[in-house]
Length: 556
Image (tube, rainbow, N blue to C red; front, side, top):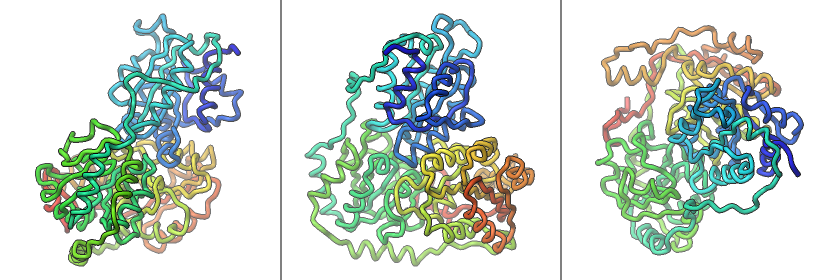
C-alpha cells in the first residue's frame, strides 16, 4: 500500500501502540496533522507551548511506563522542546519527539523557520535522526521507539523534512530491527553477581541505595524481596521515590542534600553500600571523598558509562536491575542485622524535625494535610522544582513505583503543570496531585488552559511564600541573607486560575486549607488550584550545604 510519508508515520505510531500525542501544530508538520485528522485511534492533546508538550509526554511516560510522544514544528517549535528533552534525558525517560523540518533542498540555506534541530539536540537526546529519504521512515520510527525504551531509556528525536512527509511510499513495518553497535547488556556477569552475594552475606551494616533505574527496569518487587530477605535498610534518591514502600520499617527515606538525618547517617556508617540504578549525583553524595567512607561499594547499572564515573565501585555489575537483583536473591540465605537496625532506630530518636511557630501556614503542615486526606486514594504526585519539591519528597510518602514524577537531574521549574497533564491523561482513573511553588507555577501557567480544555481534574497546590524559595534559602545560608532578586510580587493566583477556567481557591489558615482540599477532591471535570499562603522564610531542613559531607547537615 502506497501513501504519503505523513500517513505512513501515523500508521507506524499506531503499530507502536501510541494512544496520545502531545503537540502544537505549525507549517512544517501540517501534513502530519492532516493525517492525524483521520486517525481517531490516536488522541492529540493540544498544549499551549511546545515545552509543555515535551513535559507532558515525560509525565505520561514516567507514570505509565510507556513511551511518551510529542510533536512540534520546525525552527522555534523544535527549539522550544529543548528544555523538556534535556529534562527527560537527565532522568532517563523514554520519549519520541517528532519535529518538522524545511524541505531537504532548503536545509542549510537559512530558510524560514529552519534550525539545525539534530545538531541542537544531539547532547540532550539518547539518539536523533534527520530523515532525508522517505523510504527510510518506517525503519527510523521503529528504531526510535526501540532505542527510547530499551537499555537505559531516554528521549529520541526524529526530524522530518516536509518533502519526506509528502512523498508517496510503501507502508511497511519492520518486525525485527538490528542496530549495529547498540546492544544493551541485560544479564549481569555471573562472577560479579557471585561476589556481590558473598559481600552481602559478609556485611554487618549493609545499605541499599536505590535510584530511578529500579523503577525504569520494573525491579521494585525483587528489590523488596532482597531487602526483606537479607534485612537490608533502604535509602532512595528523589528519582527512586516509590521504588520501595516508604511505610516499611526498612525504609529510611531519601538521602542527600535534603535527605533524612538517619538516611545520611546510615550512608556514613554502612560497611556495604549496594547502589542500584543510581548515578552518585552530587546532590546525593555531598563531598565526594567523604561519601560512605567505611563501605565496600556494589554498583548495579544498565549503563556502563555510569560505572565508576563518580565513585569507583569495588564490585561493578553492568546489567538490568531486575535481572541482576533476581540472581543475587537466589544466592542469598535469609539473614538479620539486629545491631545495625537498632543503631538506626537510635538515630531516629536522636533527631525530630523542629518547626518554628507561625501564624501563617507552615509548608510541612500543608503537605501533611494533603497526604492525610488523600492517602486512601490511588494517587500520583507530581512536583515542580524548589523548596516545595523537597517538602513533598519528605512529607508525602509513596508506596508504589510510577506514583511520583519530579524533575531530578535538570531541576526544571515549570515541569510540574504539563507533567501532571501527561500523568492525568495516561492515568484517567487516578487522582493526580501537583505540588508547585509560586515561582514554578508561572513558568508554564498557560498549560492550565490545556487542563481546562480537556476537563482534567488535577489537584494543584501552590506553596506561595512570595519568594523563589530555594534560591532565597541559599542566599540566607551562603550569602549572609542578601536576598538579591528573589522576592516575588505575584498577582492573585487563585483569581488567575479562575480566569483560565479552573477552580481557584486562596487559603491562609488550617481550617481554610482543609475545606479547600475537600473541595479539590470533589472536582471531577476541571482542575482546581489552591493557593496556599505559607510562612515566607521557612527553610527546607535538614540541609547539607554544597561541598560539605553528609555528616555536616544543618538541622535547625
